[in-house]
Every structure is written in C-alpha cells, then in structure tokens.
Length: 127
Image (cartoon, rainbow, N blue to C red; front, side, top):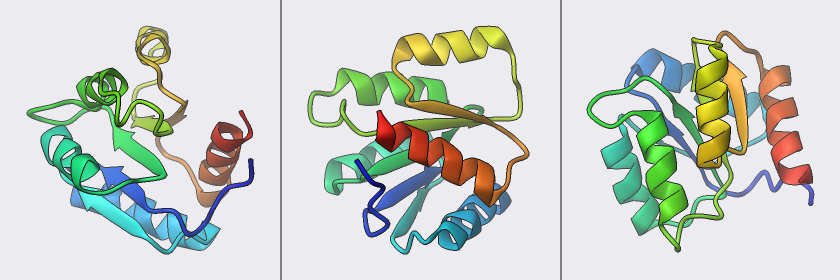
C-alpha cells in the first residue's frame, strides 16, 4: 500500500522544538496535514476526535509516556490499527523489544533526517 501524503498525521512530543523538527521533516516528505499533541493524554483525546493515518510519538513524556500511549492505542478497538512510530533518544534493546511486544509499527532513534523518517514510514505502509 502506497503512503497517502494527504492522510492526517499526529505528532506527539512534550518538547515543542522536537514537534517542530518532525513537522518540518514531514513537510519535506510531502505531508500537509500534521497535528500535534504535547503528551499521551492529549494525544488519546485527539485520536478519539479524529481519524489519523499515522501516529509519531516520543517515548519519554510526562505524565503519559509514548510507550503507555502505544499500549492504550493498541488496546482500543477503534484505534488499534493505526500505524504507530516510536521516536526515542535511547537505543536500548529492551525498549525496542518492549515497544515491539506492545505493537509498535516502527522505531526511530534521534537524531534522524527526512530520508530516515521517509524510509521508516514507507516500511510501515509496505507491510
């Protein structure tokens, strides 16, 4: 399945600068409809209001981490099929394994560029 550049994408990160960086990378790739949430709780509320084609979430956030958000999304029948890419500064294998077990679609370690992000998104939608 080809990537639909018109689908809405939700970027979740409590660090505004990182949200801006990911938003700019998505625009470079060709995505136009990019929404943002500053934590897992806000993201869940937005996910219930609107149908997103992709979630890109940071792992380390308060009060709800990206990992907790991932588990909540996968446990919700209405949301469980949304592709979910986890972004983290830590490449710990136990984190990668935990995210995979929780149903993450793909995993990106910071820092990354538009080409890396595009590759990860393409991989998610080829599956």
